[in-house]
Image (cartoon, rainbow, N blue to C red; front, top):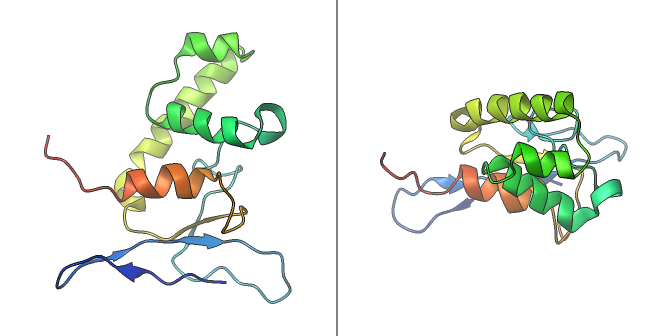
Length: 134
């Protein structure tokens, strides 16, 4: 099911990008222009919900995305130096995609009513927040 973009307030406003749930239903096709953000992609959450729990995995993703999760914290969580290095490189590749992802509709497997989802609670709000001048 595709969720249409809704206009922001004000005349000539740009539509706010939305979350699109991926589906395995027969005949489902991801709508054109929707970017998949699942685990095998650079946009996927590297913190496994089966290990950390859903809420914590999304919080860890937010902290990781926002540079609030240090190498020391990752080491204390049991990540080895090679995994920490891989996470750092993955985050940099993701951050390089920010401008390209801004304004796009994003998808993953989480239900539309799921309380925690890295796309809806981390990526969409951060990628579509008003840009602040540097």
